[in-house]
Structure formats: C-alpha cells, structure tokens
Image 1: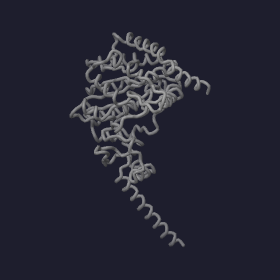
Image 2 (image 1 turned 180 degrees about the vertical axis):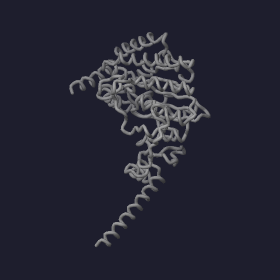
Image 3 (image 1 turned 90 degrees about the horizontal axis):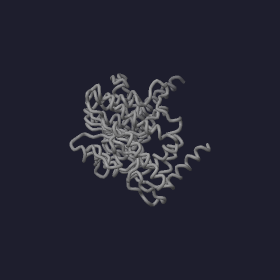
Image 4 (image 1 turned 180 degrees about the horizontal axis):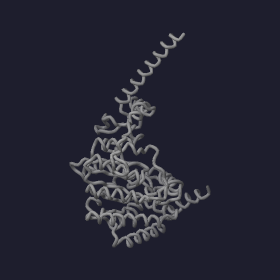
Length: 402
C-alpha cells in the first residue's frame, strides 16, 4: 500500500514539476509582458506584447532599465496617450527617448519612477505632465505599484532587496493566460505600446458619451472620494513635498526638467469649478511655481519652467459633438488630448514659446494676471457653451443625490 502510494506520489510530483517547467519555458518564450527581450512586429514596427499593457508598471520599470533613456516623458495617461513616437524622433533626433507615463498615477509615483530612471539612465531631459488630481494626498497607491521593484528607495539609496518578477512573469496564472492569448492571436493588438514606451496608435473618440463617462469618474471618485486635500494620510507631509524632491534630485544630477500642466478640455476645468475646487486649483499652480523658484537658489541654477496649457484656448474649447458619428480633432474625452495637440505642446516647450492663450510660462511677475485671464476665460466659456455647463451640473446633481 505504502509502496504504491510512494510510486504514485513520486510520479505525480515529477509530472507536476515537468508541467511547471514547460509552463515556465512557454511563458519565457512568448514573453507576454515584454520583459525578457522578445520583440514583436506589427506592420513592420517593433512593439511590445499586448500583455505589456496589463502589467504596465512592471513593464515600464524594466523598460527604463533596459533602454536607459536620455530623454524621458513622464505623467499620467494624458502624457501616455498624447505623444507619438514620431514626434519624439522629430524633436530629439539621435537621442534615446522613452515614454514612462502611467495611467492613474500620482505625484509620489512620478517621484519614485523619476528616481528609478535617474539611478539607471544617463538622463539629460525629462518632460513631466502635471495634473491637479495627481496631488490629491488621500488617494491610495495603485495596486500594482511596488516600491521594491525600483532601483532606489524614496531616499534615493540603492533598494538592496530588488523584487524578483519571475513569479509574475513566468509562474503566475496571468503569465500563462496572456501567453496563451498572445500565442493563439486572441489578444487585442490595437491597444499596444511600442518598445520605447509610446502608444502605437492615437486615441479615437471625442463624442459626448466619452466626455460624460470621463467626467463622471472625476466627479464621483477622483476629485471627491475622499475629499480633495494636499495632505498625505499621516498628516506629516503634503504632496508638494514629493514635487520638491523631484526638483532637488534634478538639480543635483543636472537633469533639465520641463514641467507642463496638461491641456485638458474646458469641460474638465468646469468640473473643477462646479465642485468648488477652483481656489485649490489656483493654489496648486502658485505653490508649484514657488517651489521651483525656491529650490533653484541653493544650486545657483535657473528655476525649472512650468508651461501652463490649461485654461481656455481654441484647442480646449473645441466643440463637443452631440452625435457619436463625429470625431474631435484635439480630444478623445474631456481629460485626454490627442497626439496632434501633443505635437504642439512639445513644440512650445522645446522652443520656450507660447500662443496668446495656450502654453503660458508661469512666473512670479505674471501669475496673478495669468490666473485672472483664465477666470475671465471661464466666464466667457460659460456664456457661450451653456449646454456643456448644464451637462456638468446634471452629473454633479446626480452625485449629490446619492
């Protein structure tokens, strides 16, 4: 009895180990999250596996380590979707460029990935898209964000206990699932990233439905749950402390930072206004400007510029079509701009230029006039786009009935 049980158990263990090894080799060969160097081709262009999108924080941390960029773009999904790889080549010829932007990121995560990049790469320039919601101090970190995956800790010291992603990439159910999807061609090849971290395709959309869907998320969750504050959960810090750390590290390493406030649609600013957050929005801009000025002095270096693409312009006031068969030129929803506008943004930043109502460089001398100009732009917009104002009011009224 015991002998038969031993034989059965031994065979079971050997077979299980064999299956496990086959599964690991299969996942390694397919490389569903593009972490082992396999390159897929689509229309003659090198792309990451479709599974890369599902493990974006891991993939981009590894991508930065592998590609060691000289020019880095950082920010939220607005920066991830709004810049094309071709634009990067046009503005930075001969440079290694990587888009490290992450969806639903916050300023702490941006700090940590900047530290990771600065520790591993010969960074020369970094472009960081700034969004108001990123500074909400009470929003928890994304579930798939891992501190120990990064090369240094928050104090910029070598992490020492580098996480081993083998379990996630070779031995997990997700790894096998996405390996099978990629191998059988059942994955979505329309939502993929190039090997330099840029999205392969521009975002489509721009209908009223996509706008309302986006705005509902900001109204019901992003700006309001919990109540918007710059304080972190322990009340000992605020989110501007993380912004300050980014600047300090850049000065120490002589990395040129280019900050820019994302050019969302005017309806996004109306969401902020009708939620009663306008004063905090203006304070956010003032405080970031003060920090850039203050942190430059100890290093006897010029303060890093902040280009403000928010507010009201011919781009941000583009008419939102009321039928789904029409597409917008500049926006896919009230939060995300398209790559045509991203091209203009990079042009302004790299040339230190702006249009009359788009891309103003914040300065202590003109900040009051600049904010007043945006307030005036809002009043004009509210009078000329009454239906858009009503749309936002209805969404907020519905939330208030919960």
